[in-house]
Image 1 (cartoon, helix red, strand yellow):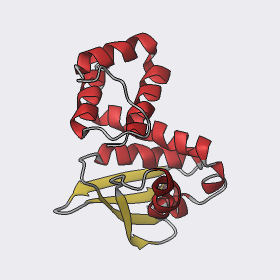
Image 2: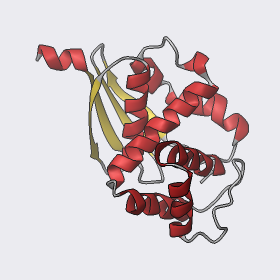
Image 3: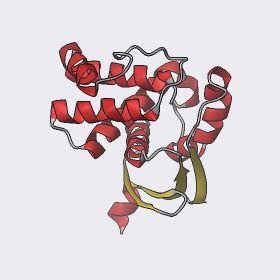
Image 4: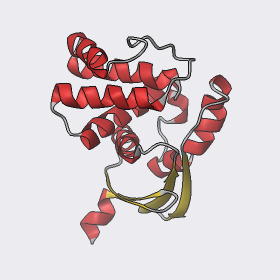
Length: 181
């Protein structure tokens, strides 16, 4: 896993819970490197699991809620770095374009990154169905990215998902279609 994910998680913890709790999380994770990560390095996924688990224990937050909050933070970080890719865009266009974002922006900096994929299965004006494929079990983080995008773009949605054999299938519905039903 790329170090950028670790450093982003640290900024998330510090912003949300404070520097003291971040230190407790790093200490509680019992990491072999003491929590020293560079954004360009590559580190074992198990170390990220240890950090997230330590944050869950330190805050009393449920794992899915922690991952969702972190995912929303990740989206906000992307907006800060690449506002032209998100501001004023339609939510479904942004979500359908995540693979393109990965290829154009992320691969430039991290050519060997193992990136998740979002494959559009079906789309209409009120509903988007995508398959999320990742070598890491982080569907709740993806929910947070979707929620973060929806909030940033002012497009309230309902999100459902189920684990399949090879992917997690997300169904995202605009809130207005839910009111009409």
